[in-house]
Structure formats: structure tokens, C-alpha cells
Amino acid sequence: MAMRSEVGYADDVDMNVVEALRDARRRTLELALDLDDEQWSGPRLGIVNPMRWELGHVAWFQEHWALRHAHGRAPLRADGDSLYDSMRVAHDVRWDLPLPDRASTLAYMNDVLERTIAIETGDDYFRWLAVFHEDMHDEAFTYTRQTLAYPAPRFANATARKSAGPLPGDVDVPGGEYFLGAIEGHDPFVFDNEKWAHPVEVAPFRIARAPVTNAEFAAFVEANGYEDPKLWSDEGWRWRAAANAKMPVYWRHAQTSFEARRWNAWAPIAPHEPVIHVCSYEAEAWCRWAGRRLPSEAEWELAASTIDKRKFPWGNAGASDRANLDGAFGGPVDVATFPESDSAFGCRQMIGNVWEWTSTRFAPYPGFVVDPYREYSEPWFATPHMVLRGGCWATRARLLRNTWRNFYPPDRRDVLAGFRTCAVTQ
Image (cartoon, rainbow, N blue to C red):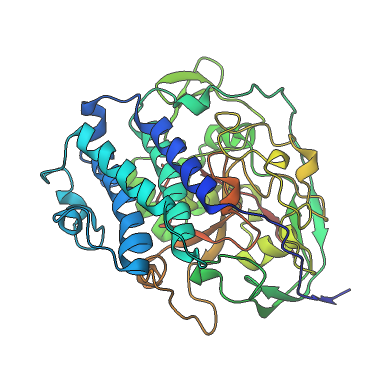
């Protein structure tokens, strides 16, 4: 039976911005300090930044918004804008800039952090913006280390998680009028692309309890799914041919199955962990092969939230120990892990473990108004980006809620993304 949502939930999150600023910086340094100067430069690739530039950019962004924009402070570096402003400095030239050396970069980062912490203000919007920006770059540092086959980061030496196995099957989600997006006034900080909750009609659907696993994706590879153009969209097939893709990007054939490279080492794929580092085109092709489909973002959010707009799949209280977040286990875990993360409908791990591709192209919600950080969302509406939901094992817990929208081009498979599927109705 169709239902109508009653929007509203209590926000019980007590966040301390100074603690968050320090915590974000600790994570940044965990991801950077063990690498040498050559690794801080890295190869010139279209999908990564030189780490030395990106570290300076994180500090510059914090200074630009929390000190200069919000409080009128003078620039700490006369050359900061010409070095670190990502909208002024083209990606390809970031390796060629006269960047400060290691010690000077770290000193600049610390100077900005301490000045930001010392601010006395009643409005912490721009300090939280700096926290969340750094959190997102920390996730980028994490998958950059994977892309470049660097050693596992320090936080990857994390708690071992026992095997939990697969979680097959679908759940039924009744349709109805659902309010898609964030509810105004119910979160202390919301990015502009989540604003604001608006009614959408969602037909009843069936969605998988868990993301697609390595074992399930391996069956598609073994069935020559990468060689069958009927399983791919025209755009996807062009991508597959250009990339010469024959399996997920960090996989290789082993004697009996497949191995995957994690950081700088190879190991057999974990059969019941979600497949990760697959792009939207690969997810779509697997769905056609399996007779399934990707959920729309409205379907995904409804399955996570319920018609009454839970903030998290399990309810309205935040709890990072209910999900694989913050790098706590150093990578994905089996899809049956964390039964305490189940949504009201029985979907597991909709927060954490792997980002999940949806079938929805990234676009503004009705009545979109750009926030002060104009470059966060607005430039990407006009380019092909797809919406992802739910966060991944490296995402910081404080960043996420059911309404959070991530977005990447459909050919990105270096990012920490997998997918969950829906049944195809006849």
C-alpha cells in the first residue's frame, strides 16, 4: 500500500568543531607522513593529484574559507592562491609548480590549523566546511595510495573482522510519496546539492539486502561478460574498449579464481566482500547479465530512510560502530557483517563499506541555490556525473547521513565504489 512520508527527526548529534579539526588533520598526516618525497610527487595521472600539492590545497582551503572569507584575515602566503586554488590551477600543471618543500608544507598546514582552532565565533559554518573538505580529501588520499600501489596506510593496520559470509535475497519496499533530500533545519551542516527535501513518487520495488559481492562479480567475468557488447550500453562499450577492461581494475587471474591488489600486495579475492573499484558502466553491465538494475537515488534513499525519513538506516542516532567507517577495518568487510546496520526494510550496510552507484545522473534538486563554496556542486551538474550513496569503509562517520550525495563520472573505477541492485519487474 502506498504511504506518504511524515518528514522530521530529532538531531541528537553533539559535534565539537575543534575536536573535528584536529581529528581530520590527524587522519591527513596518517595518510601522508610515512611516504617519502618521491611518493609525495607521484606520477602525472589524470585521476590523482601530487600529494605535496594536495596537502597544501587542504590547508589553503581551510585558510581561504575559515580565516580569510569568514574573518577577513590577510593571506598567510602571498603565493597561496596561485599555488593551491584548484579552480585557478589546472590539474595538469600541479606537478610543475614551485611548491614549498616538505617541512614548509607541514608548517603551513599547522599554522593554518592552529589559527583556525583559535577563532572565537558563534557561527562555525566555515570551520565545518573545512573539516568536511579535509575529510573528503582524506578519502581521496586513501584511494590514491591504492591507485599508486603505495603501502597500506597506518590506519589500515586495523581491527581484524571475522568472516560473516554472504547475505543473499531482496526486500520489498512499498512505494509512495517520499520527500527526497535533506530537511531544512534538521542538520547543523548540509551541502547545497542535498537541499531541500521535495516530494517524489516512488513505485514499489525490490532491492538487494546487500551489495554485489566479489564472488557474484567473478561469475560475470568468468561468463565473458566483458566480451559481450549486448550487456553494455553504447557509451559503456566504448569505455570498455578504450580501457581494454577485462575485469575489475585491480584484479588478475589466479590458478583457481582471481586475485586482487590491495595497496602494494596481491591476495585472493574475498568472496563475500562487496566488489569494489568498479565503475558505473561495469555495474550496469553486471546488472544486464544478471537480469537486475541499479536503483535510482530516490529508491536508494527510501530503502535506507523509510517513508518517515530516518537519518541513518538504523534510526536517527549516529553511531559509527554500526557500520564499516573511518578506516576501522582497513578495507571492506563481508556483506553480512554489521546486522546492527540494517534498515527498517532489512537492507544491510547502506552506510559504509562501499559507495553504491545509482542510475541517477547528478543534477540539482528543485529550487537549488548555490552555497558560498560555489565550486562544490554547481560546475558538475553540466557534465556527466552519476550519483553514489552511502559512503565507504574510508569515509568519516561525521560526514554521512542517508541524504548525502556523492558524484563521480561514470568511468571512474579508482574510487571506493561498488553497487547494490534492484529486481526488474515484468
